[in-house]
Image (cartoon, rainbow, N blue to C red; front, side, top):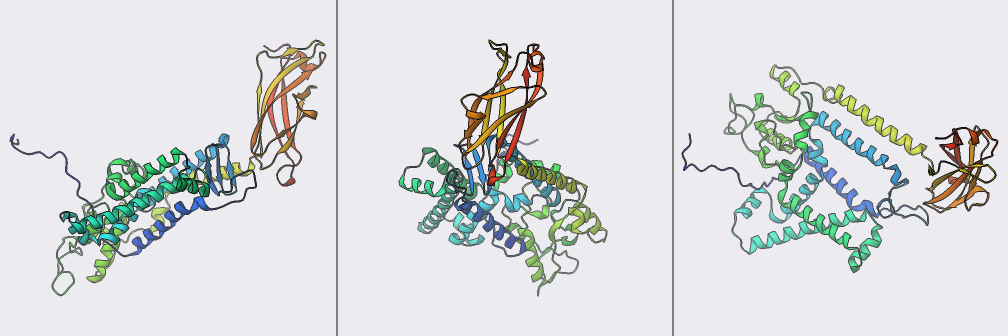
Amino acid sequence: MSSPDTDHALYAAREPVFPKRVKGAFRTLKWWLMALMLGVYYLAPWIRWDRGPALPDQAILLDLANRRFFFFMIEIWPHEFYFVAGLLIMAGLGLFLFTSAAGRVWCGYGCPQTVWTDLMILVERWVEGDRNARLRLHRQKWDMEKIRKRAIKWTLWMLIGLATGGAWVFYFTDAPTLARDLVTGNAHPIAYTTIAILTATTFSFGGFFREQVCIYACPWPRIQAAMMDEDTLTIAYREWRGEPRGKMAKGGGVAEGQGDCIDCMACVNVCPMGIDIRNGQQMACITCGLCIDACNEIMDKIDRPRGLISYLALTDETRERTGLPPKSVWKHVFRPRTILYTALWSAVGIGLVVALFLRSDIDMNVSPVRNPLYITLSDGTIRNVYDIRLRNKLGEAHDYALTVTADADLALRVEGAEGNVVTVPANDTLSARVYLDALPDSKAAHEGRTEVRLWVTDDEGKGGTPARIHHDTVFNGKEAQ
């Protein structure tokens, strides 16, 4: 039992992580992916797409004011939100698929926190130097050199954050117009507020919090275990080959009876999470592969085979310990779990594509007026009233003709429309009232319910091709309850 005077530390202060620069295949891959993703993010709002005079000419636009989403030639309306839901499902299934096949590759290569942290570290390295120089500066007392370098670094970080927040708001309105309004001070306060928040979060998360966001704020490290199994490829240290560790022998190489690991700490020094992969799998590991590059470089220098640290599955560990070669990478990637995720992902994607191509440029919503169920006119005619909404998804006004088909004879009339033809403006919705009449001696006038189909026809349609849709409803006669 400890004495009362014993000092128990319940919290350990964070030790800043200063990753060392490394060269290799995984580092090169991360550079290319970072450049691609940042390039798409910053430049995409500026791509123009001609949709005609009545629609915005921005290729990618979340038009919240008009409740529409534009993606090149695709236009998503509010009632078509199932497309967005489908894309979110595909994103989730894709995350499950990649995690099941190769561990936390999303965290290591595609997560915004990782991408912007890499960018912040790159700027830090340019200003302050590599790992040892940054460590010295961190421990150094505040003097003019430290103030100057920190001021330059923080200014560049702030500019990156400002560009990040600025690019985000450009996705929600016309980018050139908003850029001009931002500079002249005429933009909406929400735009300035959004940019300020995103600038602050990018500056702090990418510059200061870094690995702390991944370890403490992100839930994915705790969820990933359910997505992985013994055949999942993840970064591991070949302990049976590296142990026992020891220093490099005189003249280079590894001493007899010693493992391949010379305890150089290269894998630890390059890790952006500050962990030692030789201690086994850890929640903080984002499987970025930089430790592999660092270790391979050391193995080349001491003339030992590469792969002391590499992507490895638990089943391969068992095989290699017994002297058997590891399984083929494809056998790890293509297995029942990943095939199931791929099939589900593909099914959702195919369903969205089919729905996208089958959707009509006309939408109709019919709401029968139920109070009262029917009206008896002075001549005995039975009338039902319906409120309809017609949505024109095209970039120009169109004339739509309304007709009715039913088992019984019914007469249709659109209130205020000549010849039952209504004009719906471009990219707009029109509400109209429709009357269906049944003569006193007709079958529909005396039956309780008659199935009715209302038709809307556009003789011109998109590109001159006629379009026609229908909506099923009922006509209530005298027997209706």
